[in-house]
Length: 168
Image (tube, rainbow, N blue to C red; front, side, top):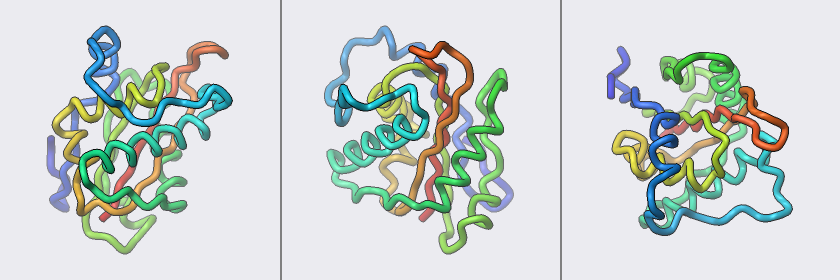
């Protein structure tokens, strides 16, 4: 994890690597709500909503209050994900612009993913990564939103990049 000039922790490890490793891993226990058969996970909006639900379910299992969905952060998250389309690696952008766009809090964090896996696998990968888990279970982070965009793949199995931004 590196620190930005304003002292905010930014996890450098990306989930894309973890998802490759965890796709062959045995089931590590509950992962959050299973996706509904009627939900179109090829749709970035529905995928992001399912991912947010999974994050809040994980927080509830760990006795942490759910994140309040923030529409301002949603716009920022989509923009951060769009900036990564086609990038060879997922790299975190500085966090102070998040706070400038959606003011009112003193700490900020972000988790990223690029995958074609179901949302519950992304939540599990974040929980299995210490720096990403720290963001997910930090009780000081109160607001959040996830923005997802397509980054290749097929119609049936699109690759989605998601940015989960947190403020608290």
